Image 1 (cartoon, rainbow, N blue to C red):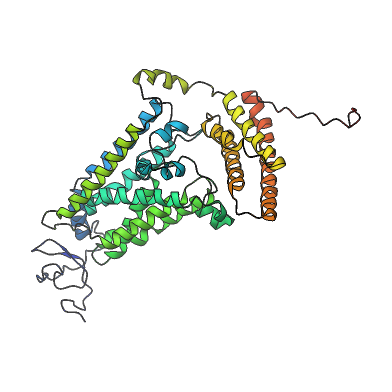
Image 2 (cartoon, helix red, strand yellow; image 1 turned 120 degrees about the vertical axis):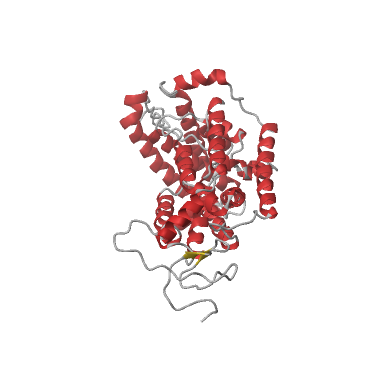
Length: 446
């Protein structure tokens, strides 16, 4: 048996000399070696609070969570700026620094950082993306910041967020996006993306490892809150990502989760009652992360090419909430996508694919069902672009891929026809014009 430990069951205590927690069964403080007083007998049945749990909670809760709320305000402020610039979609989202692989490959490195603070306007759901992520930050952020301190929290948030963006960047691999697992991890096409969910998964990874790593230090009342207690939450979120694969960037979530777990394995937390200043290295790392974020948004401002936000547009944007969405640009983008796919599948012509993809990406929101159809059509156009640009495909494989694309396009076409009947015609006045059958060689009609 190791020195300083006893065979008694004991309970978690606090060193009277340095204030560090002393695990159950230990007779000496592992931080300073001071003998621990004889543990108190267990509380009587019916006692409402474990004193050690309450002491731990009071010591942690008394710490500030300053940067959690700074990041909350920053995310909301940037969303409002995008809203005043025309909405957090399409070109505006890209102008504010959303992740897009082709632009990163052109040297716009700041797009690995800025997406952590941006959120997408979800068609039909408005600011739900922002609200759900900010709720997660509000719930998880104070735990991590109070346990580890503000300096470590800032480093965790920025590094796990960047790790999530990097994972998203690396997993745009159409050739690997096959089968349920392939579609879960990899993407068939790249589009503008943003969000703090990678960093949020990073915080969950930190708390998960914290609960396991320090399970012998935690009071009994808190052991179930961290570590394995987070498994149901993690499992539910990962399952949601699996069910919504193709729409949720699961690679970004996993990148944030794994990086958060790795950081928590290496970094110690700030124990209740611990004395002494935070190491200068952590303050330096915090300052470096904040400077990286600031420099990234300076680069966004230097390359900004969207309509600047104007408070004078506030009333106009507010009125737009009650107006019927514009149908014509939506239908034009769908027609462009359908025509480009038809020419590619039938004749192998790929020139119209890129303009059609851009038009679909910039099309306004119409309704949740209509926007889902548009996103699926955009994915088909992206597949066609990838296949047309792949010079390594053999002729037989190219023909098979085009055949599969044609079958998927036919299935999409049937869904679109049903949408027109159910919603498009009665709600938006959309009609389908069927092409006339081709004439016979002799000029007669079949």
